[in-house]
Amino acid sequence: MTATTTARKRATGSLLGLALGDALGFPTEFNDVASILAKCGPWREMELPNRALVSDDTQMTLAVGRALRTAMDRGLLVPTRLTRPLREEFVDWYQSPDNNRAPGRTCLTACNLLKDERREWQDASQIGSKGCGANMRVAPVGLAPGLSEEQRAGAAQLQSALTHGHPTALAASDLTAHAVRLLTQGAEPTALVGLLKAYAVDNRSRYHHRWLGDLWTRSQDPSPEHFIARGWDECLGVLERLEKALRVPAPEDDPCLVTGEGWIAEEAMATGLLCFLLFPDEPVTALRRAACSSGDSDSIACLAGAFAGAYAGAEAWPTEWADRIEYHGELVTLGALWDQ
Image 1: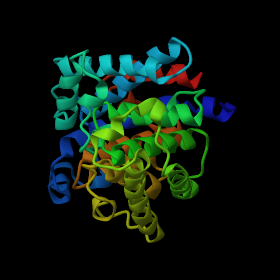
Image 2: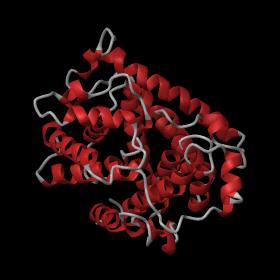
Image 3: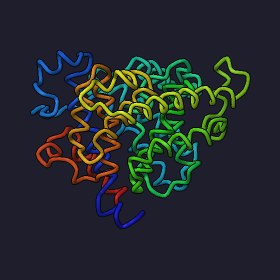
């Protein structure tokens, strides 16, 4: 970890950013842009609600963060060491009275099945779902220091696979974590899409047997390579759309019109990236653009905030916003651990 990374507190910035985006976009989810403007006024002036409550996006991000910390405290990060705490954290989230923030159906269905400890997690995974719940929570995997590329990719896909087993959910989670990691390392925003496309091509036929086991056999694919390639191909397709959109940027337009509404994993990743890349040096504006969108605005803004905070660090966010975000203490504590 470089001195610049530490000084900027990029892990803290990313975690705070995703929670702030989540809280800003939570009240505008399910609204079209006209309704949001009528309710909130000009989008560039959107304010964080006085009660800055987050959705399941931040709750599940913290669940992944806690599981990752538990596994890494016990030694080398390997699948057997991560699977149990992930499973326990997801079931705890499912059973919590605070799980009342419009959680996704896939997460609820899978976590209910994960309660049965006799069931293999692969049999709980929803193999047909590529909802954005897989990658809106994956930022901690990109932020945790000291992981090899194989560990980071495997952990990103595993945390998705426990609930969302579709290959596109796995690939989008891997790409999202990789984007966060690149930004913490100081990657230039202008180079980011090219780096992500190259990563997708390199990993297109790589199935992580050690991390995923026989998950692929629940699908109709003839081989594990065919299974995972489907996911990477869909992600490459949306990255092409993102690249095209950035050639002729239209910051005043609803970002969902270009890269999708974000209900599915690859579109949430791409639209969150679009909002960040339209305003790489204006992180609050990126959050506001993401929150004033016609799709899954809390997840889009959550991802935009994770990218923006990973790039700009903790100082990116107004103190009066950061201080009142729900789960502030846990977000800052986890971020500080990984910023050391």
